[in-house]
Length: 326
Image (cartoon, rainbow, N blue to C red; front, side, top):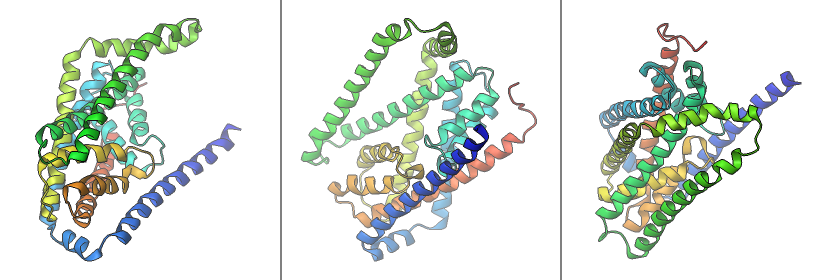
């Protein structure tokens, strides 16, 4: 029966992948239909190949910062991964987020490689969750910086909602943390010994992370620096496309667009991110066609980077110096 279920599961995964790519193309098609084509074509023509390659190279350098962050966090949980193994995990995740059929995106590929490489699978899972929390913290940090830098240029109707969103996020995080602490013991009480034994490695990994706060701080700083670099690169592409938008506005809008792209509607958030940017930058007078052109060029950088990440993961997998976990 399991043999029959496996092909069906694989078939559903590929159908899901095709559906998400179709949704991405549909959203982009709607944007192309609604926006004037000539300004969009003119904005795209303003980006020379040399500028695209330069942005791509800086993007790849920033990815090494992301690898370092993930390596630091998962090893603080006790994963005991070499940097090459962490690089394989991270690049596999980047490739998987764009090209592999997975509901949770590249995390499945990242965890699969990490678990096969590490003597502590629970540490890899716990460290990856902590890394995701650091990513969210980095996005909120950039949004807060954007709000602090543009109190005068932010439209009055958006000031109160933006502050309310940040306050709601902080309150929700505090409430979630409080629930986890308050319900930890009631949820564990009465559980079977087998369940407690399965959960024990994750509890040890959480304790290992909590005993190394300096590594979490380093991870948060690395994450903020990497995400800030992406904002700068997008702003540079926007300037090349003819957008006259202050950097403080990009700091506010870009992380929100990326958070919107996390919704599992399209593959890798393609289409959703561009639509969110068009909506978020419209109150600041940014022409929608130029915003879309910027988003398209940035997607080209991300997709090219994802392909190179997949090639890197393949080469690291064939490396004989890092055998798999027995």
